[in-house]
Image 1 (cartoon, helix red, strand yellow):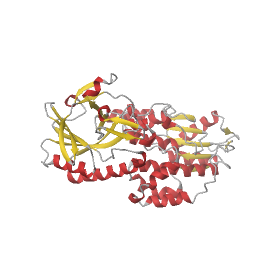
Image 2: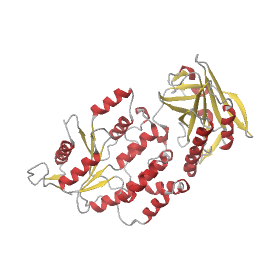
Image 3: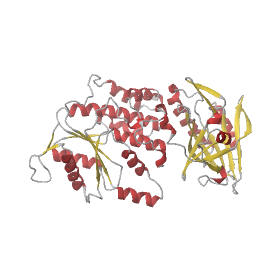
Image 4: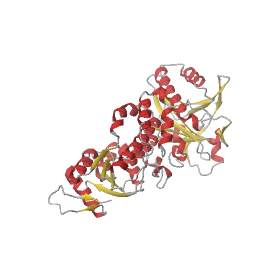
Length: 446
């Protein structure tokens, strides 16, 4: 729930809390809602009903929505906001044990730079901690919040809603009537480039990481590694041998690393992993960090990988086991959750290829639509890997080749590799030297 009470400046923009739209990510889907008064100002909002009428929200519960974001939310404070929310999450777990903590966010459609992440705490009406009002109020004071929101949803669907304003660090309750509405667009984090973890410039990613140094000792080593690189090494695509990126969702029976290694071995070409050797020991540390920091790490990793690709592709074709496409796909899905409607549409700028990275000559997307469909049917809803695959489908920056192992009747990795070679040959990326077996003396021409 946004804490922008009144007007706050953000550069030259101003926002009014009345225009705010908020959302809660639940196990049953994302619930969007807004102040009832906004409905008369925006005819495009489709009403679902009151909180108690939403099939995605539980009944017989108390809900609080709170964030630790700085209300001013300037670009320079993005990392600090992530840090504050991490501390708030720790406090919530410590002080309200056993409650369910959901992610929420608030945004202003007419001013996309204004975007806040927060948490919705949910617990039953008979929750053993009686003074949960006081605990949440203390946290609002600690994190300098202007307001927070409380909703009680009774078993019969009746709802009590209050906006608690913090005036001189003392709570003042005012009635609030929020209405559940239909989704109005894709995930708002991707309505402005400062609000998500996809980086198109590694220097911005490095700046974000430098602001996180006190929280992760691995940042110092990463910055040191980047500083030791030859910054004069140009990242260009001119006069390079083909660079072939092998991409795809993670599916049982498909190991992209094995596919890539066999391609390199069979064709006598260079094979590179998505995480450069110099960074592989840092991966575990960064994977434990918040999404913004993970995204920054993988952006820098891609930059270093790009330098290696440029160097190796001067002398030989290169196969790479996942590249920038995978980084973007996983960052997006980690940001938006498991709802297709949250994904940025095709041709969105988030899919644009970074200018500092050498582009692959071709991207081979290895998947199995049958397995993806079965995963979705077993779970009863879209899975993480379904989302990753759909995100890949929205990227069309390079020459794409899709290999569906079920359609191609591939029974093992060798068959997958064979089909990839055939497809690359069809794209005129091969110079054939009369292969006599599966492992041809085949070259890729620049």
